[in-house]
Image 1 (tube, rainbow, N blue to C red):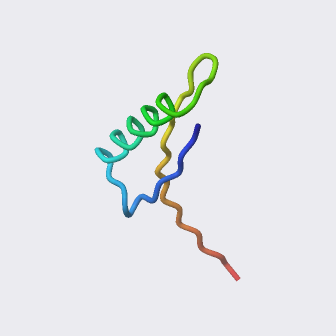
Image 2: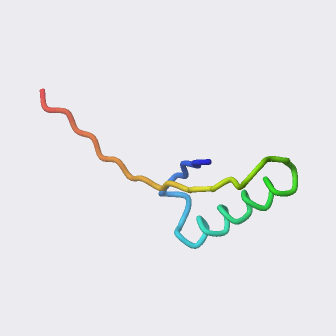
Length: 51
């Protein structure tokens, strides 16, 4: 599972806790074979256009 988070709102420490919390919630509420990998992505993009 990939989760995109806002870089302006989420710091690195909070990302680790959020990934942990999501994984625990999945374990509690779902039944699934094998394992589910929870990956958080924090990306800053800068886009400019030349006209």
